[in-house]
Length: 145
Picture 1 (cartoon, rainbow, N blue to C red):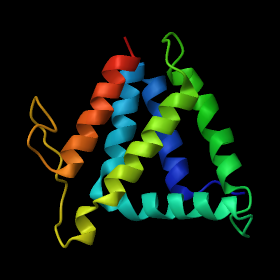
Picture 2 (tube, rainbow, N blue to C red):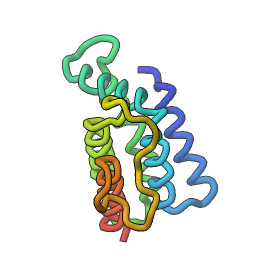
Picture 3 (tube, helix red, strand yellow):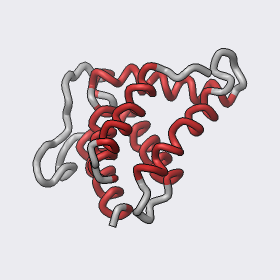
């Protein structure tokens, strides 16, 4: 399957961060920021739609899921080199939290804009997006020690 535009942009972001000497944490935070931008919600929805359709062996999504894994795991292995983090676990947590974010998408309730808290304590008494962001930060804290 041909690489989607969104996936190509995301992988290019990893490559740029790696080339610029970004740490694993910095690179994963950049990826999270890109993925959670409100303007990319459609890209996320399309990704998960294609991923699920691949389970049903439906054309044109037939190899979408396996192609995604084949494209994501090698760059994540490079990004995470020197850490104890497992690339498969990082990818699984990332995707799970993105699904949680989409489950309460502000666009669906009529709100607009990025609702993430940019303060020092994201998630405390905040929106669903704040809590999901805080969970990603906590995962990175626990994983990239």
